[in-house]
Image (cartoon, rainbow, N blue to C red; front, top):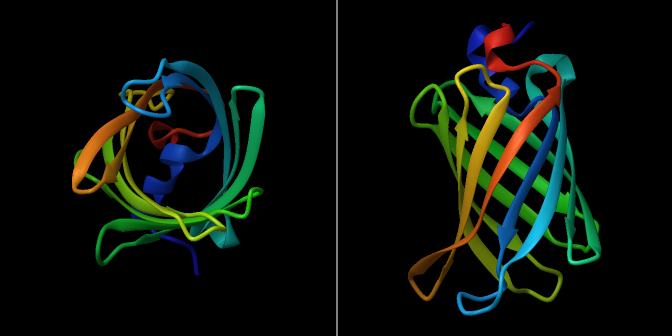
Length: 161
């Protein structure tokens, strides 16, 4: 059994991505730069996407692994991820257009803290660059954590089908 063409939505994150941006710890704190890499590849017959990530920020490096699957009935992607600091995440993503994806998730830290967040991914028409905005929710209020730009260094884009 091979996945149908609807599973090609996973290709949005396939390949090697280099993402850079700025973030702040709190709304009133000064901003600082971060680097984020994603290395995504289709696995298990193409039904899933595995992404190795590395987040570099203020001299700290965090590595992670996520696995994303696509539900053709609900037309959503479900993601489970694990980081080397003991935190883990779950999220659901929906493409609202051919190039825009809204990802809603929660990250759980080893000490029991929960961060509720959403990413808005905007991919270029050729699938080789992106803009991403991450927001977090606290006490019912959403704030922008970071905005970043990324480029795909190599790999398949949705246009390469």
